[in-house]
Image 1 (tube, one colour):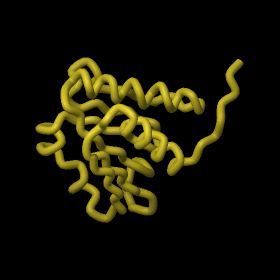
Image 2 (cartoon, helix red, strand yellow):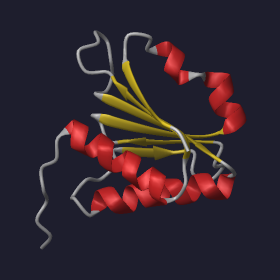
Image 3 (tube, one colour):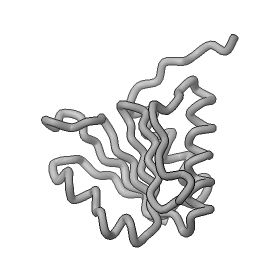
Image 4 (cartoon, rainbow, N blue to C red):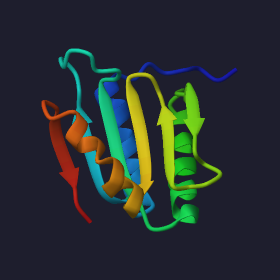
Length: 121
């Protein structure tokens, strides 16, 4: 039996960022939503992919790395199309977009009070 490890939201968010960087995710953004009234999660991690195949590989990398520390997503959506993939870990929500979809939805603008950390390539 695999022993599950407890990991806090910040450590989980940082592990997601590392996972995305490993496969050359573009323009990674970590949004700290803790303390923001009405926020549905502690952190949003947003990343741009170069193609649907790249988006799918990034998503698989995140799920694989987080499963190694005992974390399983509550929900995974959009992987077949690879245009906008959402992976929900409750306290951390991962959004992997192709460029045009990220520009269209502009999630960063929805949470103007969030502390934002950007990881540029």
